[in-house]
Image (cartoon, rainbow, N blue to C red; front, side, top):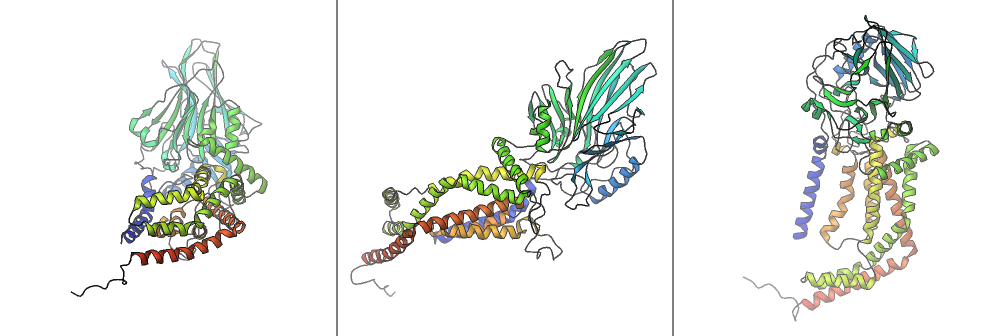
Length: 610
């Protein structure tokens, strides 16, 4: 009866876990609250008015979720870009334009990444003009001090060219009524970095004071999901240390957040994308103050504010700020680190275990470059990991085989001392010692695989290199869950099952391979524990179904290799199976003798009639 109660309790707990899985995901990974849109920033007014925020949850890619927002963004974007006064940006990594009205970099798309899996899908749009639903732009300028004239958001700049390319920088100029020439030189590289050099030349009769600034302005309505293990939101490096401490609600509640120390870079991150300002790291360069601000509604700003500079007549004041606006490709970020941007690659939220995750990513990426398929690379990674752990696994399997061989003897001890648990444990430990068996040896390879499993999980979740990477057949994106679900007949029925019931083919294969693996392991001595372990593969099938397809491929491959290794071990030790059969016969006889010895003389007593 006690065993039955334990089994029922275990089944109830597993059912509650499965039913609560979908609710738990939504509890721990909630969609950011979307406040009503506020006033437009000073640099521009809404084109068509801001729509009410949509109810759709944030995604890994970010972007507008509500259909009304998407439609309005398309309309407003076309209207703003058609207004003219723009310099074309045409580079291998970035395309778009600079708005001469205000000198804003407010139109950027990423040529190497598309919004969806389809090859006809448009490129990912990172920057969108002020006033549009997806507002996101960068601005560099000056604030005039003591009444000094300075260019503002309505200033129409003059350009010395029509197209910004890696080979052709562009300089914008504006002359104040009092004789000062303000200039911004834009230079772009082949990836995602724009270098902005701002200067003020004073040809007037009196000195002027101006305070330079640079900012990134964006809405959080396009933010990707911010979770406990992958940050999306305000991000910065101060004194070389990258901080993930602030999110949009924090900044909104505080109004202004000013991390301490010297700003190395500051901006906003999504899981895959980053927009960040990088002040000049050169020795002697003026160091700005960096902070995050909530500027009304769902609009936020990352600012670099420099101290006021006085420019005497006949003198020129100059400084440089770099703008990173693009995908968080690890190789590109590390290349910028070598160019003097401290820890930019840590904008990828590797977490505490990056010392292990980055080597796993490097190995996976190297395998991909060799076989040109990330699914095959994951399988090869599994083979390598299992190969490295083969000696440890062999010791595990030897221990498991020995445990399997002594199961009959363990059952004899259980039957003999079932009323004396302390004596039973003493006899079992004596048996382990006599047979040279370590019951915990089988746990070591599992513990060794946990860091690999977690590292691969992080790599699949947060690296842009894994985004939209196909495998074969129906698996078109290894970083997304299996798209085919059994309950809707693999998409034939017009509904999407909840996450905890979204069982795909990969999840079923995971359950089957785990069941086959457990069948080769020695059975637990406790019948209730045996029943719980028999349910474990199917419970894991439900739990793992919403995870990335690449993670399930890793686990399935690992299970198959484990089964092969177990089969190999038992084939090399056939005497274990024979001994187990002999011992099972012995145990049956021993149990029968024990039962007979416990019976009263003259046979079992019959119950007395009442």
